[in-house]
Image 1 (cartoon, one colour):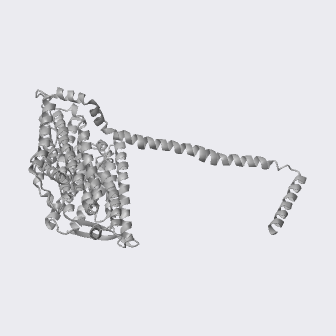
Image 2 (cartoon, helix red, strand yellow; image 1 turned 180 degrees about the horizontal axis):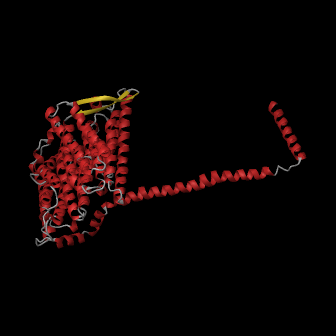
Image 3 (cartoon, helix red, strand yellow; image 1 turned 90 degrees about the vertical axis):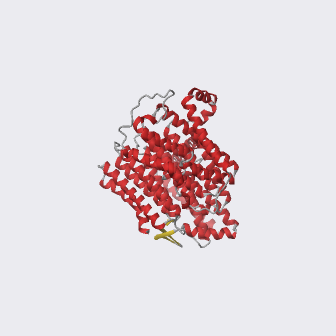
Length: 620
């Protein structure tokens, strides 16, 4: 059983190593090696679940790794319900994305490099899921960041892709710095109390005792540590204000976007919140901050998606919004609802990105204004994309309905203001997805399309994953995903709360589709009347401009100040000043070199006299 868990981790790593060694000139073999490795990990994850069930108590295995004074850092695995669910999501959804990539990247000159990085990405994410201590998790956390940098910048010849990779890497480093400081603060406090450890289960047991004792000083330190660690979550899961890297990450290949948004990088932050919920729940203030930032991110990102025209960017802002919803659920003390939505979101968001990839692969454009009639021209892609859309909107009985309903019910119980903003987020989601579907997938008004050609050359390597994910987007809500994350108490509420969420999603979607398809002139008139608002949304609330002014321009001004300081103080004063002083002294001393012996004897006599006089004064 334990060997099986270790194998799930290391098989993708072996594939990542084998591809550049053996298959650098054989792209098809590289693709099948990576895909086969992750499918093997998926099969082993199913076998592990079948053997263990959902364990009542966590199963742990580790080996000594780093010996430090007073503490031993282990390399180990921790298996509980949350671990098993995430393993199934990462390896299962990831395998379908790997399979899809076989055809999508078939003609790319960097295919072996792509699949090597993709396998390393999966290995890093599995490492986060299985880690049983902070040090191990942080190492895999950084490896996920490295992998995303390599994959987002896969087409590094394009300046946009290269810049997007650097932006993702640097932005997430801000959050990761907070994560590291939080780990060190927590460990330092535990070490001072004689209980220094990085192990999750050991820390959880210690915090249970502290919670019962009601130690005020400890509560303050844990609050600070919790906020610092949450910075890491904000970076990886794109929470405001560290969200700016995620939309630009769309410069990478579309399957990479699917993997990042559905099963790996952005899911890592929400997973960390759930894994360390025992730490965050110690402080009500930390949970309040988590809920507030998650709710704001959900609403903020959904509003920006309303005016985007790039199909991948619409989905990217949708991901930010859905991640905010999950984070809000965890901040409202319902990790079960947050992880439930993480699971269903993995199905339909992977489906939507892969569907978008199919459209881009065929039409060679990402602008929805240059698309129309895809539902007729590409029926498999179109209908599966519709399934993913309905799941994202939260229409009954699709997967997203069940998980969103859980979160709305929690918000209704805990905070009506948060409930109101999340309900508006549901409405915005319905509107921007209705707009996307009506503009890109339905024929122009009148029912005629430019071409009735079907998707003849789109292979089943691409269509197969769409169909499988479409089925899970429909039926995923009835899977027992909630059982993997235990909850102390359920949140039940009046039926009208469910009805409000369903009505906001269904009515918002249908009305938007109707208006964009049958009343496009009215839409243009409405957009014109909301000109200033539209401008703000198109500029994404000017967040990038503010960052440029405060950070990039501020950095430039600081650099110019440093340059001026260097020129005036270092170069002119110290370097050139020392040289001028030396030259001046040399010029003066040179005058003493007359070449006359009498003058030298006079100087010598004067020196001896002064020296003797000084010694007399000293001895008095």
